[in-house]
Length: 391
Image 1 (cartoon, rainbow, N blue to C red):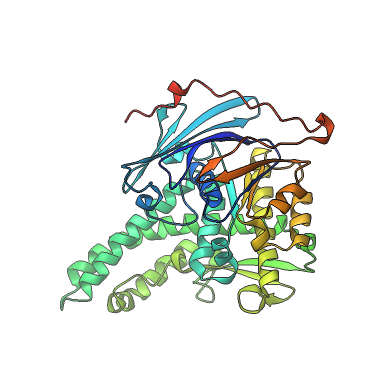
Image 2: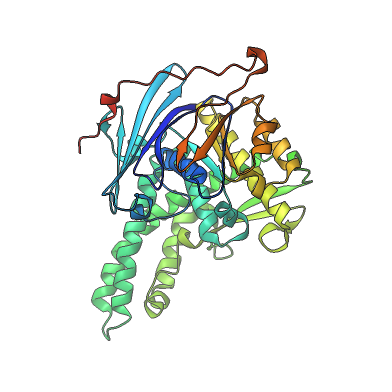
């Protein structure tokens, strides 16, 4: 899988397009020029999510009504055109000029991002780790997005009833309605639990902690229903706990039971990484998790997703950079950003290097030792008319 080209219009400060090469790509330039914005644009085009904000309006250039990203993706011998239109409070997705639902759009391009914000997966709260797992599952099973969306919709309806019930004297009519939502939560929650448990088992098998000199690293999915009964009979246990805690949920005014309260434990060398890991160990742990996700993805699709690293020299020391890039080699298209020209020069013999100034990318500085340091020809761009969304 390779992203051949990305074009941006009214997305943050970006303008124009970048043609990417297979293997390593380096975006360099001064701070606040748009390097991270290009990586965010790639991640957004791939996943429909930003790694910086949940508000579409924040991604649209000031004064513009909408932003547009469009790209060309190569998978084997096939080329596909992706387009993502960002409107004030929503996004629209297109594949080869045709409007597609998100569940059908996802999977055309996949990306994993290593950023400062993603460190919350290791050192932050359970919500960040649940998102990490759910993103990984969706990348290999796009239909799981529908399960998550439906669970969250039902949970939202139930929470509204719980708030209402906490403010009235006679809760009997509302209890009957809440029990209907609980029936749905039991089914959907079981699907989520089983998917996460299975995915964590695959991740554990794919972990390679010794790559970064970690002696041991383990992960474990921790259900909020542990020690409450037999997790092998999860749906029955969940139904039982939903019924048992109903009065407590009414008193609290929100749901207290379900997989939305679960967590992923991350241990390194016998210590819980979130509490006892050093900053360096936590960064290594996140890299190990990201690379494990790539291996799980490869087992499903026989190809690797695009790997993005924002501000690589700020987040990783030189030793980890060398280990990571050597490990990735020609496995994955890797796109990194840096503010240091020296780092761009260091990898210039094997990377396509782009200078970013005011949101625009300069000509490719791709150098190849085997080709005598000649510039690589740009991939052909399909007719621009094929990209136009039916606005």
